[in-house]
Length: 55
Image (cartoon, rainbow, N blue to C red):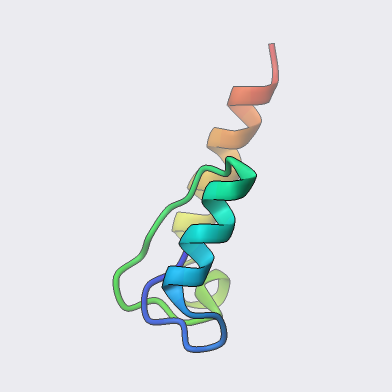
């Protein structure tokens, strides 16, 4: 999850996530504290991951 993050450049995050084969969600304008400013997006992502890994 990245957008306007200045702690780690978004391009670097995309590269690292791609190498790891990660699923990502981009939030336009989100800061490094996306989990505080966009909690519903985080909850949705965690729930989706849970559904994808359980039978």
